Image (cartoon, rainbow, N blue to C red; front, side, top):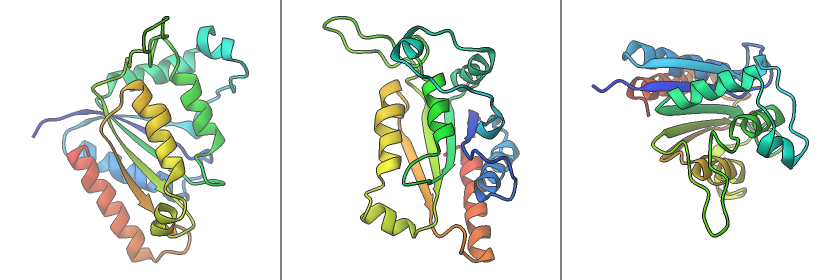
Length: 196
């Protein structure tokens, strides 16, 4: 089996380990390490990142040490695993702020010149996104058309070259049975083992 370099982005803004997103990240990491993959992990809740407030800061501001370290972990990886809870129909603000900080011109994409398209500087990497939510996952897919997930896939990951992107949606996370939770953890561990 081919081993891969994996960076896990735990996007829950609350570091309390009782949150299921953290358990899914742990299970994925355990499966990956047991299979011999190399793993690095970014816990968004532990990062001290300011929010960007201007286009000038995004385009030409100098990333701080924490941002550069996260960029190193993302550049090193062949596969990204992104986990977050659905909050108000989207990813939590801290995770969005994280992507705004790390996916800057010069690192994630080249600034487009007149008549040219921006180049995707992180092409060649794949991703798997886990989204937990309080509603049934099928309802989120059908009624809301998975809009937060699609926005992440199209507007961030595809734009910087990450493909393919697979996803897993865990619905009714707060009211689901213990056995269902265990099944999801087992699935996450298996996905980690296969680096999928």
